[in-house]
Amino acid sequence: MTSSRLPRPAGSPTLTVSVDSEIAEAHPGETVATVLLALGRQTFRHTDHLHAPRGLFCGMGVCFDCLVTIDGQPNVRACMTPVHAGMTIETGGPSDA
Ligand code: FES
Image (cartoon, rainbow, N blue to C red; front, side, top):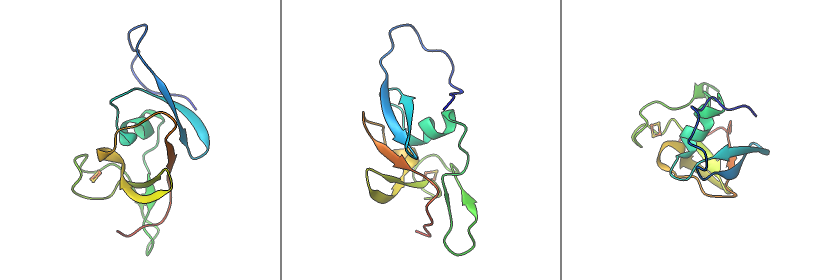
């Protein structure tokens, strides 16, 4: 996966996460939404009823458009969840929460 992040200072800590079964680099303190956007992902899930794409909208935990599955837990807000090493992130799942 390629990243669209700005360059970080040399020696900045990094960690790895799994995004839809692919390994991606992340930085401590970033949210899951930040990592997904850096990977060029604009659609995080699709609604169950109309299969409409949803992604980052409010960015502050209010709209629930950014729901993803994290470490097997469905319907977690990507914009409110900090990454941790080894995290498994799955996008694209239907959820009308
Ligand atoms: S973008 Fe609105 S809750 Fe995450």
